[in-house]
Length: 351
Image 1 (cartoon, rainbow, N blue to C red):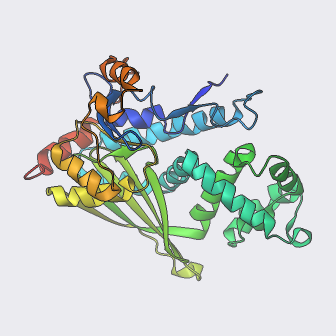
Image 2 (image 1 turned 90 degrees about the vertical axis):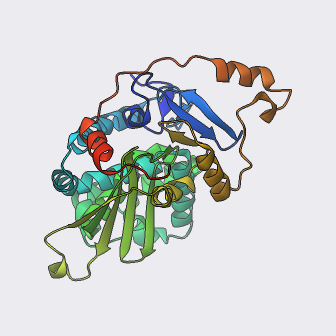
Image 3 (image 1 turned 30 degrees about the vertical axis):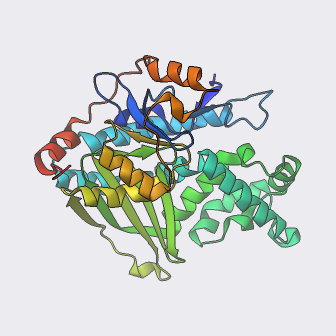
């Protein structure tokens, strides 16, 4: 049985950014411009019946399927973050590179921003498709989907008639086939492209947001997947499309960087900050320097965590929210290996 309050950022992921003593983190609200409200991962980054195509008759199919994915992603996070030695971690990341790509794609498209982009993409594809040439049967898809993807055939070339009809009858809502769509993207990028280079960044103070991963295509033959795994580790996976399969490299190049300057930390933060829709999340309170940086990047005035930021009308609501004691969440994973390594090697200077 699923839940009505459905998280678009998994609790196991958000808990990596919580304080060990309270299982809570600090947020900056981009809409209200209020800093340092305290939340638990269970209380934030969720929306009621987010994945239900029919909110009056929820099936929880998507929610339950995502939960199964989250179980294996949680194991991956534990194994990567429990290691101390960066060489061992590099090998672990290489072994998990396809699952990391999968996580990045799922995590992006399960957010409200991602689903809006899917809706636009599907509508554009379907409105521009010559149905007589591109519709295939469901049975044909089951037999040939992997082969189509391996050959680089675009997603629109294996849309079923049922798929088209249902999308049009439901105003192109991607929710009806969200898992199938995302799995198609994952299959395409993990079979057509090759992860040939990985950059690993160690630091003390990476932030999470409500859109925590990004997918960038600098060119038709290149795609980059970016994800912050914890306050201490960020990863960028570079994938390349090789026209000649024989030229695909057998090894993956891994480079890691120990960030000891605040400016280097900001460079990694910026990519994720620009994609945030509602919240920026930190394991520690935002410093004055952090606030100045956020305001310069986002163009927001920034609040001072006082009732007057919301005005008289909302003052009671805000006061209760700021003074409310957050409830403790589930026990967080310690991630001791990564924290010890950053403590020993990545002390931020002049922070």
